[in-house]
Length: 199
Length: 199
Image (tube, rainbow over all chains, first blue to last red):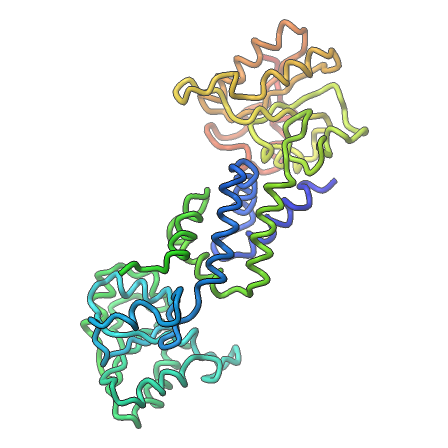
């Protein structure tokens, strides 16, 4: 006898394939779904679909947005001469929470990784070059993970951008090595932005 | 400026209201949804709805099933004279994994709790009495959490059932006090069933 009815087993499998959800959590979540009101479950399913349908990368910087251009790129009060380069949109949230930075961002969508055959063509680096080519950008601040791949990516972007006469800096490592930016507290991020240095 | 687009914020809120998912996990999951293929997200949403629409409590014992009567109640090879009483369907999975027990179950759907105003009328206790009244049941094994509410519920069910001449036992506490049955290993559950005693 199967332990769970088919739909239940399928839900547990799908949930446990998501990040941060193990088999035990998936099981608890699936039982919770059975107990919830039908309206609530339909609403959750609809919200999942809405996010997938309505949230896209910003056409300028790659940040998530429900329009064509994200709130940060379309905010006239922000400094249009500085770009912080991050791996993912989620990093922008962490940086914004530190309330230190008022410039723009650019999401490259990952890190270069020769081991995993991720080259510059797999990341949004060309669009970063295009933005720098306009001549409006004075400084590009690299804010990538301080892992081997992160350092390698920072180095390469720095090399690529230098011919365009833009200042390239890197946020300071006042932060543990090898940890995703999302896990830093706001003060560490604040200090790291303050202590950025030219590379 | 809101940190997230509206749909994104809504998904994060909904996910973090579920058990085992904190705000940080909800955020990671929401970003994962944005990255996933559209088909995958639609499929996940559909599976949530399927579970809600197709999984119901068994009409006999209250266990989850995608039919009218669950696989355990409709299994002719099982001992129809013994019932294990549990709080939730998820407890049945834990008990079945121990592969010790071959009788039936009854899901009461929670515990009595005077503090939270949960009385016998809020639980599936009447349907348990009906099953015992048929005279086919020889033993009812109480397998509820060893918390104050669990002990109180076991005591009350025992009192209610005694007039019907059925043997009422309780699984042994070879297991930590105050922990949900779902966290026990199979051997502990096996021993607890073996060591049950009349109350």
